[in-house]
Length: 195
Image (cartoon, rainbow, N blue to C red):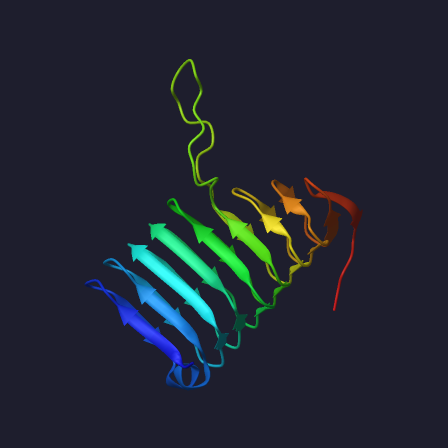
């Protein structure tokens, strides 16, 4: 199935390189207004589903491979995927609340991974009524490798050159060039590199 572009709103900016459209598959859908969607040259979308609701942005920089990427951005959700990133089958990027997912250049994201900026539901302090789990931006720096079924949760930062092992859950900051595993993920080795 070829790449289907559906614009259901107003003031949406959609810029997809023509070669990308010709060689990709999936659905790109701007449901609401004032969204920006940019997919640069050399990218490949394979059975992707990208939905932007209102005041959102999605950018995939040049030469990235997005295989079965599932993106949902509600209001004021912003995604930037750097150049030469590769996603294996079925990564979910969820922005149910205002925040950003920023992925650096040359990252490798294995299959069945989840990156989310919120818990999708509010948790409130019973005494004050204040929310205790607000949405937070996720930052994945250059050259990060996420293993299969890794979950990267709201507010997490993964430093450049790091690797996160199979089924780990990242909830905090992983320093650069670290190997992290577990639930929650913890650093088990530093000064690593990968290829």
